[in-house]
Image (cartoon, rainbow, N blue to C red; front, side, top):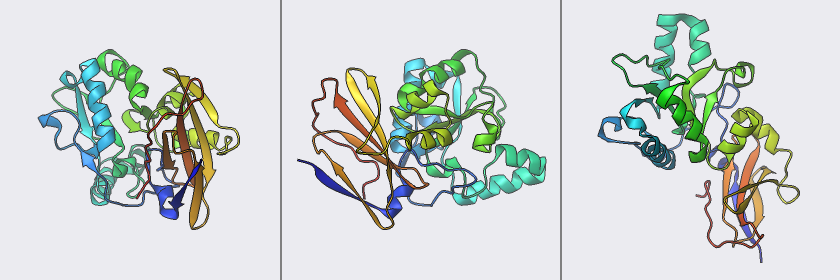
Length: 266
């Protein structure tokens, strides 16, 4: 027997898959923030789930010895100060290429982090994070922990931001792996998933003996009702544009598993 989930209009702006860019701004809300890693990284905050997974990834590759978190969550005020300082010091062309407008920065969500190779001097705006050594080891494992390189080379016209090899965004599992395999940005992924309406034809992948279904549900004006099997684990994230991305985890045989997880509740 299915249950009904009521998604409020504001839920569109919550979740790990929200798109924040020049066109779609971030709606300020109090996030549950935590610091990934060790005492030395305590000033760099992320949403708690993203911070825990980042720390797990770093522990697996031994990353904290050579990788430094440069910048995580920022308030609107902090982003505005960075924007204005960059304008004054580096000019508009540079700033628009590498610094997001206040209110349109992923850093305000707590889902993004800039990483740098540990060295004596680190550029705050453009930290060195090469495609070699431990930094490349991080990239190769990132999708397994829900992270993507958010602004890849060759996608500048889509993202509106220059190539940033140091900027990583938590989007969750399995979405990071799908984006990596299909070489998609978050903008492209959100458009891609619209092809798979909820209740009709979900996008399916298999992982570790489970079938995972990803689909799109268009938001209604005030309240969107979602019919869901309560025995199937699921996650719901707004896309910050026009609806929701639904993820369901099923057993390989098609039998349901008990338990559930909802990103946008309350």
